[in-house]
Image 1 (cartoon, rainbow, N blue to C red):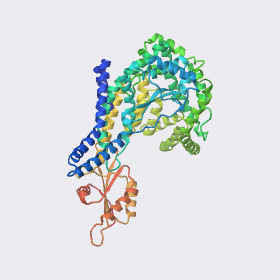
Image 2 (image 1 turned 90 degrees about the vertical axis):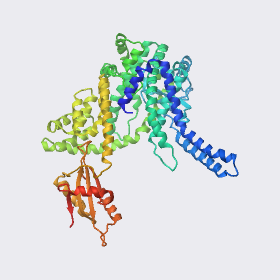
Image 3 (image 1 turned 135 degrees about the vertical axis):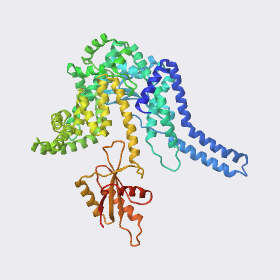
Length: 636
């Protein structure tokens, strides 16, 4: 099911059964039971077939003992295969475990919130480096659940919110495990989250071994998961609104509103400013600088009118079906916060909380926890940081050489792009923007310059970037998937939900075209239309030199298959004939060896299919010889 079909399915559910919460809950339960039935079907099949042999073997044990033996063996091997498939252990979430003894105030708040909402217990409370809070589920029995609930609290989130605002976030997460969602609703919510992980894991695994039921299970999952997920998605989004409302009742609507606004704002500042600025230091530091999370805290405490633009951006975002969480404005409306009240909330969040929730709830343990979080972050990033530093050192030298040779002429566009590429990788897109515009003034269709300038402009909120990205896609359609995130973020930031739907429809069409293109390039038959190769003299000379260097190649014909999809790409057909043996018969091993050598050596502006005129390829070889100028090489 593609994006457009999923969106339409979700809309149908919302307009139909989704209007009745209880009816939707029952429908999701039915789909969940169907899922379990489908997943257990291989086990039922194994048991049924085994019993068909075992029962006669038990009844007529003297005459049918082989049946009993076959049945037992099939039962053992089949159950092992099913268990091997469905018993999936997923890694527990990573974070810094905080204990009750370390942070008694935090656990007192957790206990109080859980008791008021009658929520399930948490197996562990983890502090993580993200500006977010979540409940993570680790299913101990794979697809059959038996979850451990982990409460994950982002240290940046705690340091950016007041104690009461953090209480709202905590209550929201506890509400997902409370009876506010009905016991079956809790189960469905956890089931969707855990199945999402398990099914993603199953879909990535490949068949290995002689006995495997994975292809059948994967086929069922491909049919079942989009349909179950669409129903559970609608229910989960309803639960998000319900969790917000429940949490707002505990702390008050004004506090809930400032918590939502502040968390959205802080997350955007960190993602768009703090972390990119930090990674800009990679060129000057072989290792990540010390005190990163202390600097992060200082940034959150200094936010004010200078970041008002990012604060306002949050209110322009629109809700899409890429996430169950609604956008900020819809969440505020969901708790009953009107536009007039939101104006007052904006003024409130410009003043950082004093003290913040981390200082209140973590107390004396905060410095040690912050140090451990930084160690965890450094451990995850040290390899990447080191690689980027080495790369930056090389780029610095390259940029220095390029600065020595000024480029102003039309024929120097390639050299200008080399310099722009070095600036993009070493500094920021903003530093390369003047050079990118200069390139486009000389070569308006330059794909790379259009792509990078368009991406930067859209990320900066400048709609002019759309035309540059469209120009880049026109020059290279394969760039389209890389532009989707830029387009989507810009449309969300500007509230253009209709354009997002158009973008998804366009992405679905592209993916179908990609699938058809791969199929088209995977096979060549005599029924295909063949075209002249149209290589330049230089490209042809290089190819002929490679053919002449091979001792076995006598002649070669070259053409192209006519393509219906991505026609700017090329699929070349190279038919070689090798020197025959003294008895005038072709040695197939020597023929294949020559083809293998040429596969490694031949380089053309497109894919190359190399074959010999024998077997099923004989009709293609005959058709190829009838193309004008197909014979490009001959030793005779």
